View: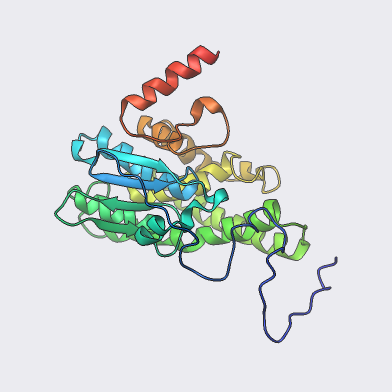
Length: 290
């Protein structure tokens, strides 16, 4: 099939067998597909997620809060296998009607509070713990929030656009790959220019903006996303690479990246996290395997 072979009909209809890696779970309607309650652990915060870039944002935030001494940030991280459609269970849809990970349930008060969308979760947790990792004074606060929302608005072009057509689509469409590769590189250039004169994205202070941007764009320049590092010439973005390594060196980031992870080195996969000691158990398992 060539790029010009398809002529859209007057009215679109859903073809279930449309190919692609996620064709078995994609659908044009919302709501649950099956009845299943979500598990609940012992901690105030119940996170239902997967170790994708969006999921990593929140687990990094939790680990950073705990590292900063906020003991009330203890959490249970339950694995949601999106490949099996677990995000469409009745319990998950109650927490996130959009059926996307991550989803958070805060049970610390008299009435549970649901929070969905990764950026909203980061802001909620910051406010919950006295404005942690978010500057209180202007203009630094506005800068951090602007970059946080930049990521929320830009990353779909990277994941749903470039990642989908480059790595997951059933056929390689040159126009689509070129379109989204161009936009991905433009975004990397935006970030590279910002980091040329700033240690962190929002300035001199490490914030939730870094936590949101790093899993996507840091992962991209490190070659972790879509096996596309060479294709996108990520070595060109030297300031982003410096920043990516600096963030990765933070112990809380290294821990958060492991939570709910199901791909890559088995020694880096903590499928569920219910206690800080789970990381020690993972290291013991890794050492035994070696």
